[in-house]
Image (cartoon, rainbow, N blue to C red; front, top):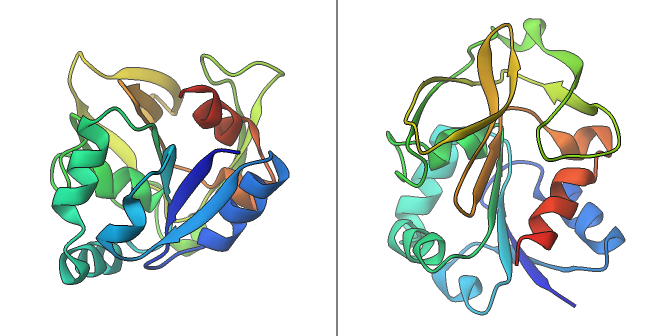
Length: 181
């Protein structure tokens, strides 16, 4: 049974844990560096990226998270997780995210997206104060766009999406993460 960490500093980490359990994985809430040990994968959930970065700094998680990614551990970042992974924050994706790119809470929306590498039809995506990527290097593969803006990308062992698959009960991104190792 794979052990998948879910960064549990802020955001709906419990919804990710429910999906992981339904797929036969063992979720582990991660709040301190020691909880990163012996993980098969990691999820950085949505929430508020500024609050998450404060928690990462407070708990001394930045360098251990960078080391985890450098070691090849698969990582999925959703919504604020995409921002936390970008070049202005942890620097684990060669991208720059635009926060609240689609607008404030009232501009939240849902869409069905075709994601490269995901079979079974469109992925139902819930966008809440979602980012998009305003800059990305050639090392980053775009998996989906909304209105021409990248909202799902992959670079090496890191997958990031601007939406909340866990709120729609969408399991295929978690399945992809589990197939990566």
